[in-house]
Length: 244
Image (cartoon, rainbow, N blue to C red; front, side):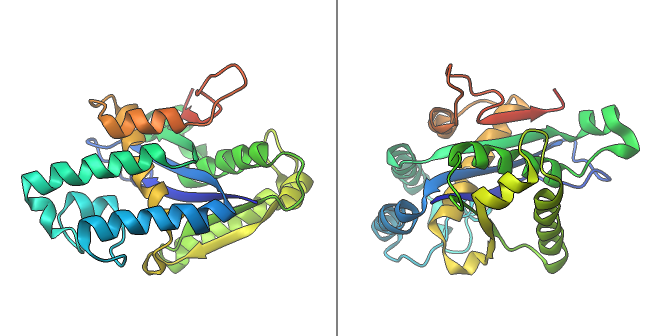
């Protein structure tokens, strides 16, 4: 079974657009379920033990950049450099595929006005399609795992998934989504799910890249992991940027 672990970067709200970060990215990693629960979790725990002496710290970009929730040592320049060297090595050596949809919210709103679709729901449709493409014709060969947010947003996501099973997408029929995807599971951040932490680590470099900011080593790693078409293209296969 292939599992798509989801995370996001930015705010999906179209009513208040941050001029410093006017995009929304929904991205994720696709891994074999057995690999995610075994090798990925094992190697991530080794990384945590090596750097922090515990497996309980949860890799979360916002906490890492703000030196909080177990990442207080990131204030030390030498440790910070060592951390990113080790993290880049970990992310480079793992076996996963990245899929993401980035929406330039200001352009999206300008193009569609009041009929503009919610960026989260639009991105979700696209990522479910890519998971279906990866699964192929294997019945119940895919699973979606997302992080719990708040009850309202979680319910919206569950309704969006239900809608896909009723209406399908542009390229995947509803019956095929029902057949190929076993379900949508919401997990709490406190559960320390390795796949969700890996998803968190890939979305920020994608956001920076789409914004045109200077690419760092983490983007170069993520770029190599992006899903590709048969002729090697990333655009549309692993990374969708909207509006086109």
